[in-house]
Amino acid sequence: MRRLQRFTPNEIKPAGWLERQLRIQAGGLGGRLDEVWRDVRDSAWIGGSAEGWERVPYWLDGFVPLAFLLEDPRMISRAKRYVDAILASQKPSGWICPHPEDDAASYDSWAILLISKVLTVWSCCSGDERAEGALYRLLKNFHALLSSGAVRLFDWGAYRWFEGCIAIEYIYSRRPEPWLRELAALLREQGVKWSEKTPLWETPAEAWNYDTHIVNVAMALKAEAVSHGLLGEEYSGEADRFLGLLDRFNGTPVGVFTGDECLSGLSAIQGTELCAVAELMYSCEQLYARTAAAKWAERLELIAFNAFPAAFSDDMWAHQYDQQSNQIACEIFPDKPVFRTNNCEAHIFGLEPNYGCCTANFSQGWPKLALSAFMRGEGEVVSAVPVPSRLDCDLCRVELRTDYPFKTEFVYAVEAKEPFTLSLRAPSFAKAAYVDGAPASPEADGLFRVRFAAGEKRVLRVRWEVEVELLRRPRGLFSVKRGPLVFALPIAYEKRMREYERDGVERKYPYCDYEYLPGSEWQYALEGGFEPELRAVGETPFSSARPPVVIRTKARRIDWGFEPGYTSVCAKEPRSRAPFGEAVSVELWPYGCAKLRVTELPLTEPPAER
Picture 1: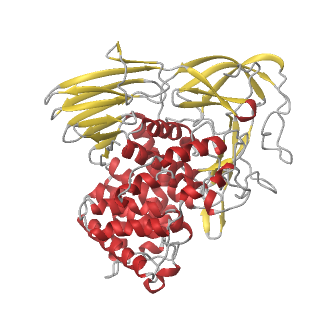
Picture 2 (picture 1 turned 120 degrees about the vertical axis):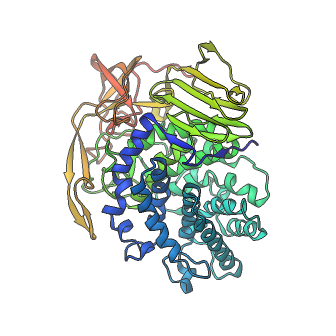
Picture 3 (picture 1 turned 90 degrees about the horizontal axis):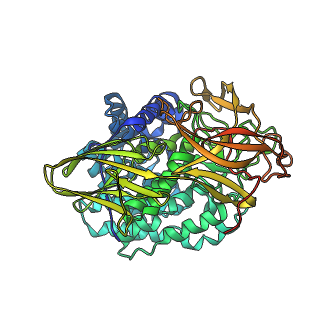
């Protein structure tokens, strides 16, 4: 199994639309959370009285790489203020969490695993030598607590035990001491055996539990990949089996799974929690880096270019907790939510709809995607996720100019410092590929390889041919896909702004809540004849007003109807598929641009089964 290495924010920089997207995040909720939200602003992690468990580490896990990718001195200084406070609070024993050390047994160790990831990220981004020493002492203390029986994993820590392997591996690569591998073994021993939980994913119960909690499941996809090396075990490909089951019993057309908040089956009106979207992206990034299997990079793109941007307002000041494939309104339910275990406002756009975990955790999505643009092998640089970016490392300088995923043309400006190979990934949806105008076929592992001599400068022009395809969905419905983008029928809407205070948390413009009220027809069946129209990518890449690509097609009205008991949720499937009236021209928009949408639709003449 081939393994790739990650580059740091000192080596990779975003460009083009991706840099604009990161700057939008920096100016929105994710970049300003320490100024507007008490659970970060006044956290116990920095000596305050607010939450002292997962929310500050969640936020820093994304804010730190964002600050360094953008080379923003003020953001770096703000991140350093938090890290300085955390490091200063570390006890001589190594205990670092804002909870009494003599009561460590009652503190869910998920916070220890999470802050260890943050210190790893800070060390990689900043080069701060203090972080490595603090992380070493933190892990040494955790090993002592677990091995002595003073602390045992429970609840979230038990289900997310493998997350600690990120930091353990980082320290082990610098200080290969046997107790670090013992710590990994202790975590695995006390942690949940995920392979034993998969039968519960097939018919998930309509009840909250850790076993089918969608964020736990999204994280667990990478469990074996990040732990097997430390444990001295062969990699068995457990993630492939997990993914197959999740797709089969809970999948959506945009690469994520239903889970509001636990796995919710195959329904276009059940939700998917934003934390799970961000964590699933991270799992795919880790899986691709550790296996070099193309399916993980391709799944990452499907999620990152569809499900992730769909959950935010254009300015990224508001987000959803739950998104739906067929989401015809985002109004607060007056009584019973359609969601299985989430509340009546989980799908509105706001500061912290349902729970605040997503408010803190979504920040990792775009920065970690940017850091996945290039990865390295032995004498090799892999264009893993071909988004606009620049790489400057010991082997080469590479500038990638592209509007991917909206267009499938790429310009690589390459300057080799040493002899190296540039490897370009060929996606499964490409009907043909061209390098410098000539047809090209990938090697057996799906990569095109171009070799460079030291000092060589060259510009590569790459193009993929892609076509519109139909994805079969449950209940005889279909989704439209082109390249990595899934398309949906957009629904026009008006926003209803809500400013208020609840439980001491203020919602005030721009960090207030919004309901999205539908204002256009959505009860259609598609007739077919799909014609893409490529447009300019604007200042807001996934704009909800001016999408950078649309697909024109014909549709006819049907009597779809509402889910029984609801007036703002479409039925799971149309009550009648018989079209009436004349065919009309409609535009399908990228899923991430269409905040209200129907993504899984009937066809007036379904294709024959194959």
